[in-house]
Length: 120
Image 1 (spheres, rainbow, N blue to C red):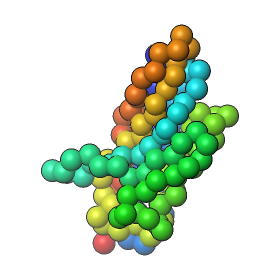
Image 2 (image 1 turned 135 degrees about the vertical axis):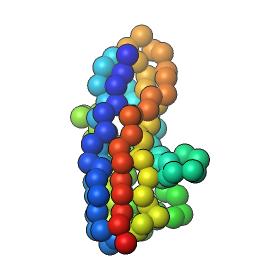
Image 3 (image 1 turned 90 degrees about the vertical axis):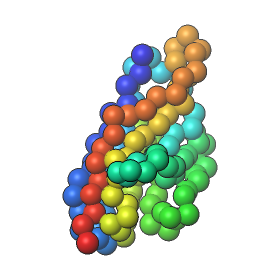
């Protein structure tokens, strides 16, 4: 079993910054693509950014130039640096990881979510 634990959410004024972290632990052999998703009230969950094990990144158009995804493979941790935050960035942010477990089973895992609120 694998657990993803997120941290770093909170309340910030528009134009401010936050850094989210997501640490994976458990029966991990390796981690493939990791990503951050978000879900605002009344909306579907949407992709924010992804990163491969080699460091290739992909961003939603709405966050390009403001958010940066990174990872520390040695710590099994993925980060999301969010700058120039806007009220429309308000959502619950979830991390996702494609994990190859000890025993070679591949599974998708999600974190519990962390609230990000941006005030105008």
